[in-house]
Length: 467
Image (cartoon, rainbow, N blue to C red):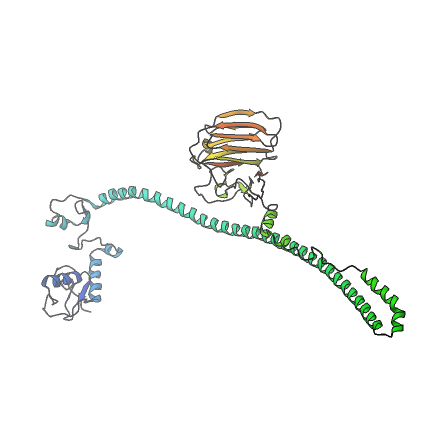
């Protein structure tokens, strides 16, 4: 192949080495940008060299010429092979200066051109270090933000898994509860059907016996009447001879009492159907319970285990839980699901033989991820001693003296009256009362680090008909 000169590698328009060369049907080549500028300026698609018209708006790339130009640039400066344009695109000189006004690298020829007149320049390596440090500083907040997003994303991943697990567990519990209710209803239905069948059999037997007795009497009366009628048709002498016997037989039949229908023979339908659903509902109260406080697993610490019915809590082995806003930071505490900001509320907690516990009310505005004691009105049992604490963390009553060890503790909250009272429901003994003007919602609170459960006791369920 014949070698080509540098002039052959230069665009006829810009007189620089081709950049993205394209070829026209007339075989002349130009930089793609130069050709487009020429056509725009002259408002006609003719060749800048031979003036021939071109119908092709998008000329084809001249691949051969492009490779020759790249080889020429590589021969001038090997750094061109790195893929970065380290040479000036206008003058093919090294970019060893940085124009502060245009914020771009330039060559020495650019520095002396009219375009950069009166501009300020700095060496490339100096500005690269300086601007690199500035960029690194500006990236620090982004790196921190990225770390936050990664952490939050991991927490959301954990939350998604936990939601799935919660949904599956709750679904099983719902099915189990309804299974028990279905079983109760099926057993109740069978029991009531058995009573109905027993009544049907008993009364049907009595009626059947009555029918059989009536049949016998009908037959006997029919026989008597038939015999008497035959004697009436007999000869006078025979009739008179048998008359006394016929009269005696008739009189004996008169002594038989007439059959009577008796009350209560039919099925007592009201007994079976009257207020049926109400009666079943009333009976169901023996198998259901109502807890005045429902514990919230979403607030429970990682070392607590909440019972299936959400009424008791104890210490467990520890579980990896999602970091949700509702959860208390303390690994051994939990809250009730519902708070209250008015009225009177009472609940009993069975502490049993639990060795360390706290029973309290928690103020909703208190920081759940910090020191929860700043929002607690509480009674605690620790080291075999009872103490009362207010939210100020000061001991209100150190070492409360009781005549007996508590097995249950009652919490009585009068929100409107500003009182929280603790007492022993077994002996009706007052333990301590806090007074405070409440302005925020209060939640039941329990703390324990014992494997023995603390249980919210159910209240008595009754069914009442109001007239």
